[in-house]
Length: 604
Image 1 (cartoon, rainbow, N blue to C red):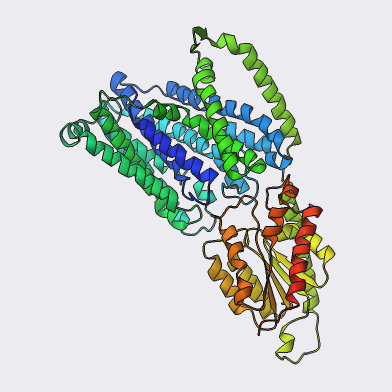
Image 2 (image 1 turned 180 degrees about the vertical axis):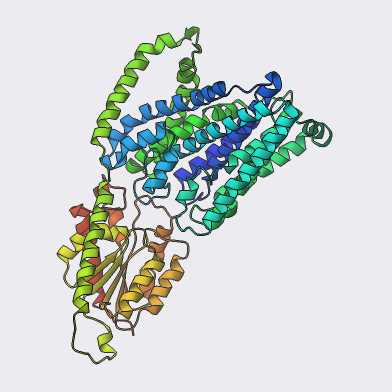
C-alpha cells in the first residue's frame, strides 16, 4: 500500500540537501534534509513492522535485513561504478584516501571514518567524494539495532496492541537518550562534525519517526488515530497542517548554520518534529483524498530521491572544480536524475529478479548479465587502478603540514634567540616598533606559500595557520605587539574563513594596533565564492578602508586571482601552495602593497 503525499516529504528532504550542497552560503541549514529522511525512514520501517506483526503475529528479522540491504546496497554500488570514471577529469587530490573511502562506504561506516579523519561538508579544502554516505552508515546501523529490538519485542508480546505500546515507549526512550547526548555534547565543542556524524547523538530522528509509526501507521492504525481522522480532520485541515510544517522545514533550512551551537541543541530536534508532523499531515491527507491521484512528478522525484542523493555529491565535487557553481549544479542535477532513473527503474528491479518492460520487449536479468558483468569488471579494474594511484594525503594538506612544521621550527629558533641575555634598552615611543620590516599574519593560504614568501622577501616574519579567522588573527597581533616583536608594516592575510562578524573583528584590529605602524590588508580569494560569501563581502568592505584610515593599504589579491583563474587548474580554487606561478603573483601582490604603504603615513 502506497500512501499518497508521502512523496512530498522525500522531495522536501532532497531539495534541502541539494540547496545546501550547491549553494551552501545561501541555504546554510539545508543539511536538515538528511534529518527529514531519517525521520521518514524510522516512521516507515516501524509502520511496516507493525503491519507485518498485525497480519502474521511475526516479525521475520532475516527478511527485514535482506529487504533493507537490497534497497540500499545495489544503488550504492552502481553509484560508485558510475562516478569513478569522472574522477579522471580532475587531479589526484580528489581521490585522496580512496581505498579507505570505498571501504567505509560499502561497509556502512563512513560516519566513523569521517570522525576519525576530521571530515566535514564545510571543509575549506577538497572534501571526500563519498562523505555523504555517512547518512547511509547511520541508517544501516539503525536498521541493525532497531530491527533486532523489534524482533525481541515480538517474542515477548502476545498481541499487536501491546506491541504498539512497547514500540512507542522503546522509541521514546531511545530518542530521548540520543537527543540528550547531542544536547550535552554540543555544550563543550567548537567543532561539531564529531556529533553530527555520531551514531549515538544523531540517531534520534529515526526514533521520533518510529514513535509516529507506532501511532499513525500505514495499514494497521491505532483506533484512536482512525477515529480522530474520521471525526476531527478534513481535507483542507490536513493540507494546511502538512504545508505549514513543510514551510517550517524550509525556514530552518534557511536560518540554521552548521557551526552554531543552537543547531545541535535545538535545530535537529525541531527539524525532526516538523518532519514527523508533515508525515502525519500527509497520512491524514491520504485518507481524506481517496479519489485524488498524486501528481506523477511528485512520485517520480520521490522514487529516485535516494539515488539522486547518492549521485549528486561526488558529481558536484568533481564538476565544481571544472565549472562555475551554477553550471556545476545544473550538470550535476541533470546527470544525477538521469543516472538515478536508470538505476531505480531499470537496473535495480533487474538485480532483484524482476522483469522490466521497454516498449513491447521484456528485459530480465539474464539479458543484462553480459553487459553488466563487463561493466562491473571495468569498474572494478578502474577502481583498483585509482586506489593504487590515490595519495594518502592531498598535496594541499601535505604542503600545509610541511609549512606548519617549518613555521614551528622557525618560531622555536626565534624564541631561543630572544631568550639570550641582552643589554637593557631605554623604552620610548619610537622603539615600540621593532624595525622597518613586515609582520605577516595569515591563514592556510599564506601557510601554503610561506616558504616561497620567506625565500623572496627580506626582514619578514610570517605567522600563518589553517582555518584562522580574524578574531584569532587579532590574538596573534596582540601577542606580537605586547612582546615587542611587531614590525613596522603589519600585513593581514585573513578572510577565507570569514565569520558573520568580520567587520567588528577587523575594526578591532584597526583600533588596537598601536601607533607607528602601517596596516596592510590582503583581500581574501575563494575560487568558489560569489557575493553571498563572507569572504567576498569582506574583500568588498576592505577596499573602502583606505578612504577612512590613512595608514591602511589594500593588496587586492582577490582581484589578481580572479584575473588569473586559469592558473588555479588542479587546485581547489583557493589554495596554491607549491605552485610557484601563483605564489609569485601572491608575492607581487604583497610586495606591491608594502611599496604603496611606504608612501603614506603610519598610524598616529
